[in-house]
Structure formats: structure tokens, C-alpha cells
Length: 429
Ligand code: EPU
Image: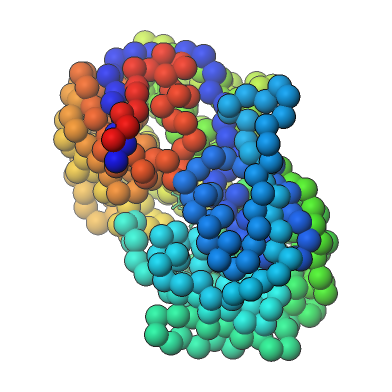
């Protein structure tokens, strides 16, 4: 398994291109199941999760063609995928595949909407918590699907098609909202989703579905209205930029010091994260190219942050912020409200010398003068990258093991950071 070696203490200077968002790409690829025509997605990041979903969709009969390089393209330009679900040959998603990537459970919505049936393995728990799918099932039932749970599989049936309905989520759920929007797009009649997730990735998928012929309004707000249509068509769509990748590198610059432009980053998608960085002492300037992040000399100020659904501070940046706060001058408090067990980074950060106390869902971080490199590893993508951030400011060498997790969600992380002056390299193994 590959490892990443980092020698801390160098500033970051230059620019980092931000890729297309993983969490928009995955549901967009899944939305291709809604039509027998070709969906073309541009700006798709080269990630292990994208490759895995390609294989999972292949199992349902979907063909994915990766476009070749075009003149003037650099290694950082996203890929173009031509996705065609002309013939769905299998409506079962087996445990072996769904258990490897939870988001693949979402195929349940387009499969039942288009073919009238889907048989999807329950995903099971994962490193960041139990993550149930009860609300996704509730949404499908409200839209007329009959649900049975048997032998670890959720079986959804709608022999005569789905019908419009009202879905009121008792809790904000990104996956639940994607499921409801996709299913309602092909249902007969009008659907209303209340307390919908407002994440930019929801809006990006709805924009793409509208290009495919869907009639969705209100995506990006907590009330989405969908007028069902009889069929959807092919379209071309560019994936929105990855706000979590941008926020992660912004934290890396705040940690290491320096001056970096995050190219293609969209500040309006990351306001809560950027506000916290300013509070901590970084300078943030929106530019034509993206977001400029600088921190020169000054110490970091502690912060108090609670994660929340968009537009609140994202849970997907919680671990990275905690890494940053290990070096603040004073005591920070970070409360995680989205996932009950998203604190695997705490013990690993402690190996680098961080002082963090956990009590229920709140971590209290007492800033320290110095961190010291050590071998570390984590079992979740965002936890792994928080260790990279800490390592940038640690004395000596840190070896991050199980890089597989980083590759699920960060494209060429070591190249992007080393181009800005970090001493970071991948060791193949
Ligand atoms: N929940 C339920 N029942 C459900 C669905 C969700 O109780 O049926 C709970 C979850 O257990 C959690 C909360 O609702 O406590 C919110 O979960 P949500 O459904 O919003 O999460 P998700 O759709 O499974 C997506 C992202 C996550 C991100 C969360 C929250 C993708 C592929 N995944 O997950 O991204 O943390 O939204 O913003 O979009 C990551 O990229 O590292 C990642 C974990």
C-alpha cells in the first residue's frame, strides 16, 4: 500500500488547481441511469471513488467512455465521461459493491423510477458512524414505491411507475434529497420536498437534471418542487468545483503559512469555512481566478465551531480544522453534529503531539507550541487529510499510511502541495 512522507516546516506559495467536486460527480454519474441517452460530464476528478462507481454502474449495464486528452489540457484538467445507460441489464446492486461505497446505494432511485424495480444491498455501517438509509426509503415510499427488506437487501417496486408526492425530511439529508429528486423527476405528477438539503452539490445535480429535461425548481433551498416528466434525455454538464478540496487547501495554507491561489475555487460555496479561517488569522481574498489565501508570521487564534448542514460549517472540513487548531494560541472547541463517530483523527493527531479531549460530540483542543512528526494512519478520507495538514507544520518527518483513503477524494494531493513548496512525496508500496 502506498504511503505519503511529509517533512514539515515549509511555507506554501503558488497556486493549486481545484478539481470538480467528488460529491457532485457521484450523484451525477448515478443520474445517468435515468435516461437511455448519453450524459456527458466534464471536469470529473480522477479519484478512486469515481473509478469504483464506474465499475458499479457497469454492473447495471452502463457504458462509460473516458474522453481523450485535448490540445492545451494539463494534467490537472478534469476528465470528460460519456455515460450511457441505453440498456439496464441488472437492477440488483450486490453487497460486495455497495459496501465499498455508500453513495452507490443511491442507484435505487433512478433504477426504480426507470425500470419499476431495484434490489439494493443495505450499505451497513462505516468508519464515521452507522449512517442509516431509513429516510431514503421513506422518500421512495412517499413517491409510490413499495419497499420490502429481505436478506440484507432493500427491494423497491413501482410496477406502474412512481407518482408525485410530498416528502418531508425530519432531518436534513444529502443522500435523501438526491434520492427524492431523482425519483420524483420521472414520477407522474408534482412532488414537493420539504427540509431538503441545500448543499451546492444538490443544486448542481438538479441543474444537470433540468438540462436532461427534468422540471425541478428550488434546488439549493429547503423546498424543492419537481414536476415529473415521462422521460429524460442526454445532456452535457460541467461538474461544480470541489468546495471541500478548496477548504482543505485553504486550511493547509493557514497551517503552513504562505500565499496560495486556489484556482477555480468558488468562495460563495465555502463562506462558513472561510469565515472561520479569517477568525483564525488567515487572509482570504476572492479573485478572478478563485480564492487567495495568505498567512504570514502571525499566530493562529482559537475558534469555536459547530458543524451543520449547508450553509453551516461542513462536517467534511471538521477534521482539517481540528488539525489547524492544534497549533492555535489558546483553546478551541469543535462540535460535530452530523455524524456521531467522526473523530478518528483525534488519536492520530495526538501521536503528533496534539492535546485534544473528547467529550460526547465536542472536542476541546488546547493549542501546542510544536507538533512532532510520527507514523500515522486513518480510516476515513477527511481524517487522513487532516493528518497531512498537521504534518505540514510538524517538526521532522510524518509518514501517512493507508493513502488509499486520500485517493478516494483528493486528486494528486502530493503533486498539488509539492508544486507549492511542501516537502511531500508518495512512496509506492
Ligand atoms: N441519516 C439518517 N437516515 C438516512 C440518511 C441519513 O439518519 O436515511 C443521517 C446520517 O446518519 C447523518 C445525517 O443524516 O447523521 C446526514 O447524512 P447525509 O444523508 O446528509 O449524508 P450522506 O448523503 O450519506 C453526504 C456526503 C458526505 C457528507 C454528508 C454530509 C456524498 C457522497 N457524501 O453523505 O461526504 O459528509 O453528505 O454533508 O455526497 C465525504 O465526502 O467525506 C463524505 C462523508
